[in-house]
Image (cartoon, rainbow, N blue to C red):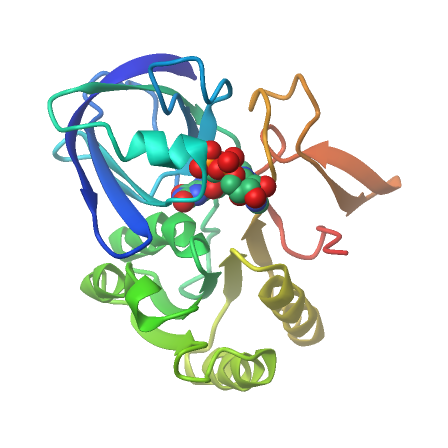
Length: 261
Ligand SMILES: Cc1cc2nc3c(=O)[nH]c(=O)nc-3n(C[C@H](O)[C@H](O)[C@H](O)COP(=O)(O)OP(=O)(O)OC[C@H]3O[C@@H](n4cnc5c(N)ncnc54)[C@H](O)[C@@H]3O)c2cc1C
């Protein structure tokens, strides 16, 4: 991982709350895996002092670009919206442990909520490149927030959308969908990001049906390189329960190991 100043190719508002940024990643020699993230300096001034972490949304190896999809939340992301095409953005990465598509996982389920869609989109892209069948349940407040649906469908994924707006995003309904899709698509592994509620659901179902899975966690981060311990979470291991750093040992963990509280 390194600090890079990458040229901004575009940085555009794509819905009421979301922005999409495309960077020229020609300078990055390291390989980048879905689920990994960059810690981005969001403003030129003193504030915000800390960089902000963003998952890779899309990796375009042929054209040497990377993309981010971000939700505008506070000072950092507001500052990021001010960056214009032609300027440079200061990114540190790639960081963390990404998703791993294991051998034999020829059909996968993605369950994403809100901005978790941004994190799982790159995995759908990788699945398509490896001829892995992909079915995705995307959950959001409103239809307007289901931004990656078209892109996932473009990768050949089957996409099911659930929203508060349509009254379809409650856990009971998502459970019915998951139960049905696991059988219909002969799913071999499940992946999730973006909601503790839905993560607990998929963790429970995966355990009952003996399906492996991975989860990308989001925690507030300080240094993003494992020094400050601001982003710890609990996992089950041979010692019982251990605290690990989301930035270093994660953000992607085995689904069955994470203690979701
Ligand atoms: C590994 C990782 C990958 C991420 N990938 C993406 C991504 O692809 N797209 C995207 O939009 N966001 C992503 N995030 C979340 C993103 O980092 C935060 O939304 C961003 O840091 C907010 O910064 P801000 O200065 O705009 O808001 P702040 O002023 O820092 O925060 C605004 C509000 O959001 C809360 N908040 C801030 N960070 C987090 C967090 N990590 N978890 C929960 N609540 C938080 C704060 O408590 C506050 O209430 C990711 C986070 C992590 C840890």
